[in-house]
Length: 79
Image (cartoon, rainbow, N blue to C red; front, side, top):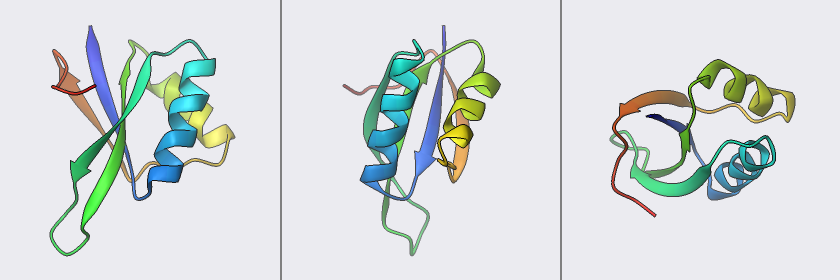
């Protein structure tokens, strides 16, 4: 299964995004990730899905816009 990280600037946005994805049947959890230099930390939603475009559309419908999306094959350590 392929995992994706939907990266947000705030914990609140990441928590909302995890809720949106969870209600849509996509297993998701919030993790902390290092931000770009000078930006501090960021938060990501780690989601297991075969259709990231559908997940991204669901987030956008709720007004949630990730800073970026990364494909993580095989998953990453985390909760």
